[in-house]
Length: 502
Image 1 (cartoon, rainbow, N blue to C red):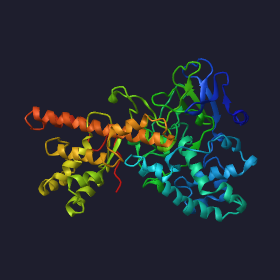
Image 2: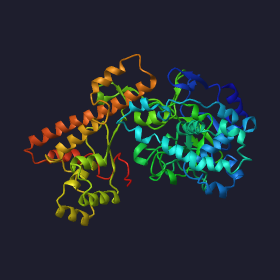
Image 3: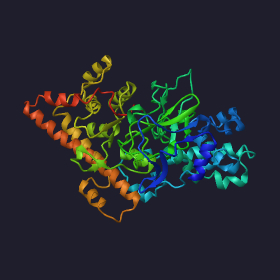
Image 4: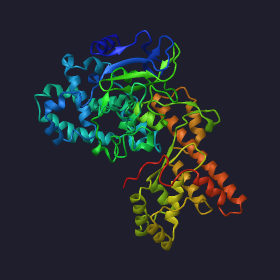
């Protein structure tokens, strides 16, 4: 890394080498360590905006021609940014960022590189449908390849098989997915973070949205807490085509810092002409310096970064897990259970369309909270309405109340049990025993951690149902206590669930 540090400093970067050093951490890869005690609000490094690598700083879009760039749809989605990075790397020693690009990883443990056999271990988890390999390869063939062929002056034929292959496209995309930041352009003297909320410290700095796993890879603001907006998303989402990535940038030095659950002690802030990494708490000598991806479930950590977090979890009675783990319950599973596979009927289709049009969720999120999401119960009640009740509900324009009773309880139980059957095995003990084995490959171990965490959430939801059923019996079956417990989970349209997509 000596060459990288020298390049960083030569190009205007400032690194406090008396305070931090770059080193390797077993199991975590390269990271930064404090060489001495570092106080809070200390700037450990800064760099000019011009040293960030994005479609705004790369000269490729200009050389290609902005009109042609848009014609090939390289201004939408991730193909344009990926192509810029591939092109800059192909420039060799003539390229501005070659030393930086040479410091980036060339191998990843993310599921997009797993074999089909390995992916089977993730069956049923929230990972599989979000990997986005097919969508990424479609962009490669339909956007990037045709664009390259039109400009042999920029993309010589003898470089295609080296720098512009599908494999290199996946590698570059993974670099962006795991290491980029949302660094918005300076506007009217005030920067805004990814949630478009002004934050001012004593120097009128603004916090940059850290690790673009949050901006590149989130369906909406409810999914991670650091999303760009409801229309932004990962490469595998329905909204990829309208994604504006012009503010997404690779930030040399900042992307070296690792992340770990509830461990962030430094954040990236930006001003008009430069970015700076500032400590947010005192750091002792010898401690690792952590930035943040946002506290994400293991399914997202694995998909985006190729690792998982295991810490003591209160809901697991001190056992190791990830407190942010969640289970996604798709609305079509709910419909099939409640409607007994009669969801093709016109009556149900109208209700479902109305639910989505009114902003209802098409995926319900279950987490370790012992209160079940109100939106799920409300959706079930919508499907159970008589025709007369449905017509009145539609006229009022309000979702049914999230009332928990003896009619809803068995349906929730059936939904959770059906969700458990989507895994290779619903048995938690099987996975727990497998994890104790020392012969597991890294990918298989990660897969088991993810699916076990999700199954533990479902087991907790079933346990919550047992308590709620007992509460119903205690009050004579009129449902009042159960109703209060469910309704306390939030409004029927909010919470952690994702916005509806037809």
